[in-house]
Length: 236
Length: 236
Image (tube, rainbow over all chains, first blue to last red):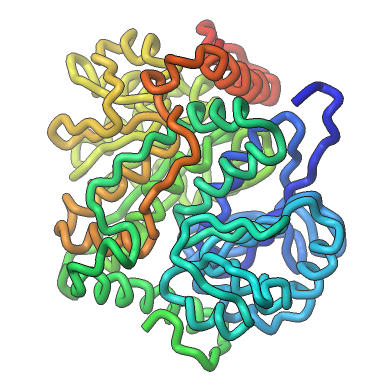
């Protein structure tokens, strides 16, 4: 990570109904590197409302303005369900992937990689509640937290973007720098419970049901606020 | 968590030079609850630039408009160093704390609780690089990840806000709901390295030095972009 390092452009697409932590986990890991420049892209520059509408994030650039980022991180969220046939978004992913150094996703963001045709025959992670949709794109869903297939990295649900972000840091710099970023973010997790994945929560089916129910409310809000319905029941 | 539950207002102050993950960790845990409404407050409503300026978050309300939130989460970031004597911000914290159900902080956000006089004699967590400043406010800094002292909760650096957020969910709802939110966020962390806190990184002093160096750059940027210097060297 010398002064002469090429500056790498990290592009994170944002959209209405994004799960903010999906984007912010990798962003926080990567943006502190002196050789990384972050851009938030979307159909057009400007604010987009995150899930439930409490918070706006601003896209700094339109898709057209950033055709060839070095790193792509596609976050997920209930709003992704309204974008799975969005041609400008999918075209941008396909085109950007042709020249990217790493193409990555967090949570249901991997559905966009799938919809763009990038995951055919590949093992990929995603949120536990959308394995079936990922599979419909020809991918092999796995419960692994972070999966690397060549230059494509996919991560599991929401918080897994931090794990993937640190792995990305190690890939584009070195292990020592990644360890330093982990310390800077004080990522020494101490989850209060042990229900962080489907397998661990299996002993408490009512926890799984309640998680689905909370997710269903988020999805319903995303749909109600964008006048658009998808055929598949995702969070139910 | 019945339909009749009182709606709890969660207020998260934002500012230029905020570390986004500090805010987004607890936000992501809490905002999915049907009985929680989130507001982002600041001196005035509108966009504020996060550390290094890549991303803007929008405050939805001014401090004056939200004098009595039920829950307060004060995030940190390099920009906090320019706010430690900011009277409107500190007055808001003091006033809001008088009636709050929970007053909390993440990372260097606890310095604001300290500056507001709320931590005198109390044990409190903060980012490992600012223990000395926290101590100067009469608090007893600890390396614990989440600390509860009555209705005040403080968390360690950056990513610790997720752990605190889930604890807060269990306090304002019940353990079952908190477990469900943990599953929804798929918080089953698998950090790639074991350098997530000062103690664990102690065997590699160059990792600590590099983390400080990265942090120093963030602090320098925050200062350079706000034409204001603080007396204490924080990230060095």
